[in-house]
View 1: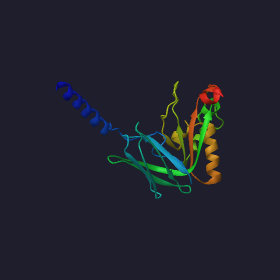
View 2: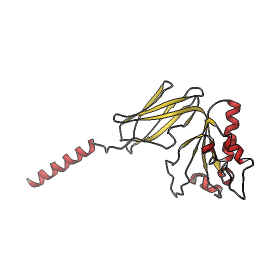
View 3: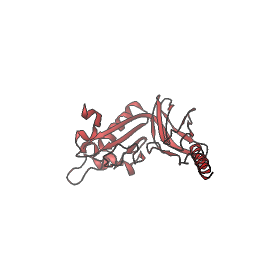
View 4: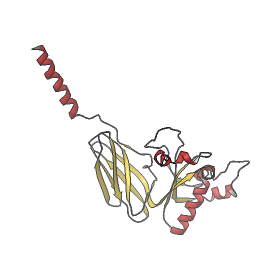
Length: 221
């Protein structure tokens, strides 16, 4: 009789644990934050983490929304259509218990700026030996609110990671001095010629070898 009772209790525990999932806080990849720029007229991906098997909805103030379900590991990803360039807009990320509001979102052209020290070098230069020509004048005139830059924090890791650290900065004399100089001049020219918001995701690391930027799969081939 004791053995029979023990078996019944164990089955009960297994059934109960199978019906519940651990609650996780709603999180977005750092790329999706205030002041971000999204690519115009595309199905733009959003992703993050939340409680497994629960619904996540992304809603843009331009009139589009998309919904998906977090997988068994709590990861979710979805795509939402964007309109022609413009803004500012707002984006709501909604679950049954949380709403995250992203403000001052622009829609335009988004580029990745990557490389070594020639891309890493900031608009203020590396004085006294490596200045940028007319650096002080360029910084003082760097007033382009529709140009934004997300600078990825450098992070040495032997494993592939699925998130980054950083934030979107709006181009102003106060902040532009720390922008990648090459990426800034590129973004400014595009903004002036196309007359649309420009977003730069800046991820560079001076002195790194080309293999460090190449996937293991590609290297093996």
